[in-house]
Image (tube, rainbow, N blue to C red):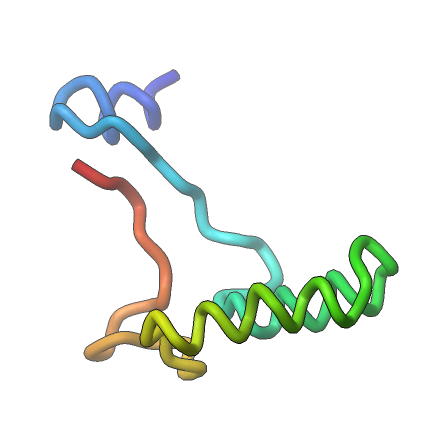
Length: 73
């Protein structure tokens, strides 16, 4: 509850997303999803193609920061 309070209620954020314990890249996650048979390669390719079109870099870091967000206003 303390984490939710710190990230959301006290700062007026509406979403909080925790860091993945094993991966920081959505592209690495996409590979894991296919490997674990949670989706077909074709389904994952559609999504990752859209990520590329939207400009999401394959690098795990953005301007020296991890490629994830803790909270969204």
